[in-house]
Length: 136
Ligand SMILES: [Cu+2]
Image: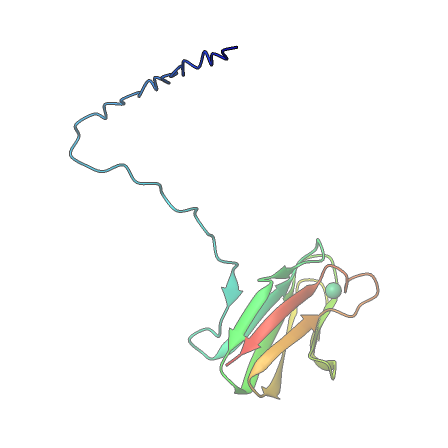
């Protein structure tokens, strides 16, 4: 009795079709541009040292971010045309300024380095009028 192993290994050749992409010979390597990151607008003190923020008629801060050097900070709050606002800063909820429609008010606050929330505490405003003040 003879067992024949009809083992004929079959080799399957996988032919990989390489696709050659011929790049245009422009002389410049193709680069992928990084995503454009638009930094959030952050207000800083003007040349006169005053840190200005506007409370809008749509119950927003402009800007929504502020930054200032540590120490005594002079604020100016301006209200747009139709709505009252106030400026309350930090966990101590210090009332810095308050204004009526179309007017402005100023106030000062001495702050150490850190991040402080600033809000308007007029009923119905605080949920949208929240900004971060970074003191360095
Ligand atoms: Cu307000």
